[in-house]
Amino acid sequence: MKRWLIFLAACGSGSKASIDAPINASIDAKPQPSADVHLIGRFSQDARFEWPGSTIATRIDGTSITVKLDDTGQNRFEVWIDGALAPPIVGQQGPHEYTIASGLAAGPHDVVIERRTETFFGVTQYLGFPGATFVATPGPSRWIEFVGDSITCGYGVLGPDESSCFSNDTEAESRGWASLAARALGAAHSTIAYSGKGVIRNNGGEPGELMPALYERTIVEEDATWDFAQYTPDVVVVDLGTNDFSIGDPGAPFVTAYEAFLAGIRARYPSAWLVVAQSPMLSDGYPQGAMQRTKAAAYFQQIVADRANAGDARVVYADIAEQQASDGYGCDYHPSATTHMKMAAALETTIKSVTGW
Image 1 (spheres, rainbow, N blue to C red):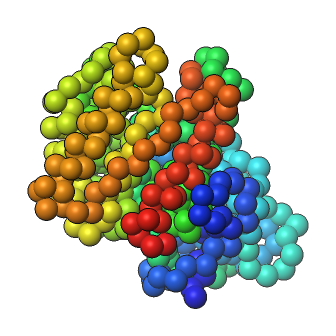
Image 2 (image 1 turned 60 degrees about the horizontal axis):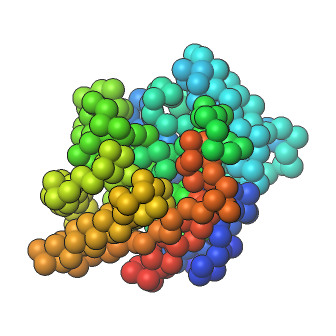
C-alpha cells in the first residue's frame, strides 16, 4: 500500500466527505514520481494559476511554515496542516509571505493549500516556501478532473441562505462536491469551472465565451493552450447545462455541442472514464411547466447512448439529485454545504462502480 499525503479518505461507500476529515488516505495504485512540491491542477511554467481548486502540496520539516504568494488581493485559500483544517489564507495584493503554521512539533509536516475562489478573482503566483526544508513525497496515483459552472466552483456554499450574499468569502471550491468527492476517493483533482458558463449559451443568454473554449486554457484571459500532457485524469466529470437551460430548453443543438465537447475530451484522454452529471439546480417545478430536469436527463442519457453507439463505452451518466429546500441553500439558491455533501456521496458511488476504487 502506498500512502500519499494529500487526500483524505475515511469514507465508505455512500458516506459523506467532510472538509475537516483527516488527510490519511492510502492508495493501492502506483503513484507518480516523488517531488518536493506538487502543483495540482493547471499551473503555468512560472507557477501562475487561476482555476478554483488548484492545489499546492508538500511535506516540510520544521516547526513553522510560511508560503509566499503573489495575488490580486481577492483570492482565498484553504489550508490543511497534517490533515487538520487550519485558518484560510486571505490574499493580499502583490507578493506576500503568509505564515500558515507555527509552534509545530519538530519533524515533517504535511501541507496542502487549495484555492477556494474562481478565475475572475484574478491570477495567483506561487513563489515558494521561504526557508523550508522539504521532504520529497510521491505524486498522486488517482486523478479526477471536473468541468463545470458555478455549482462546481462552490459558489455561495459558505453563505447563510439564498440571499444575494455571493463574494470571495462565501465561495469555496474546497467545500464543494468536486473537492469533497476527490478526497473521499483518495484522488487528486483539478477543477475547470466558471460561473455562468454553458455549452451553447451562458446564463441568461449573456454574451461571452462558452465553457468548451475556456476549457482549452491555462489562464482564462490568455491565449496559451493548456498542455494536456501535464497530467492524465482517470476520470473526467462534466456538470454543465444549468446555464444552457436558464432561458428555456436549449434543444437538439445542446446535445450536438455537448457530444462534440466530450469527443474533444476523449481525444485528449483516451482511457479516462467520462461522467455526464445531472444538475442539482434544474427542477421540473420551476419554471412552472418547463420540465427542465426531465428534459435535461433525457439529453444527458442520449449523449451517453450516442457515445456508446460511436464505440465509446467509457461514458456514464450520474443522476445527481435535485437540491431540497430542507437542506438549505447557498447564495442565490445555489447548493448548500449539505447538498454538496450529498452530491459528493452520489458521485463517489458512480465513480466506484466503474473504476473499482
